[in-house]
Length: 82
View 1 (cartoon, rainbow, N blue to C red):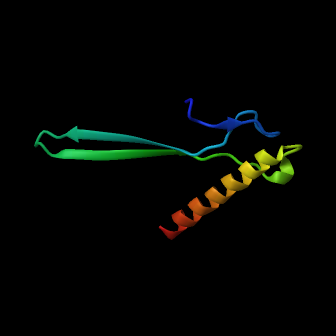
View 2 (view 1 turned 120 degrees about the horizontal axis):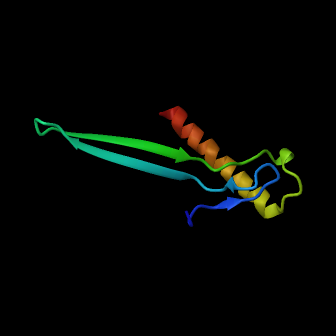
View 3 (view 1 turned 45 degrees about the vertical axis):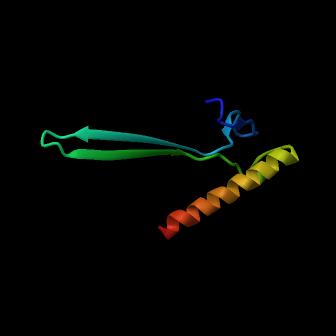
């Protein structure tokens, strides 16, 4: 996917730097004309390694990692609230 952002880190050559949500929606018509709906959500979260485990990263990559960690923390708080 050309819109998917990846970046190289010390621990991972192609580290995902963005979140992606893929939704598969299905509809099925039963013999009695009832319509059934199903949705499958596939979520790929951006990867972020601990700063102490990454060696010699540029400040821009470190800032990117901080932002990814913040968004993952917010997502975790939302899930816990639900």
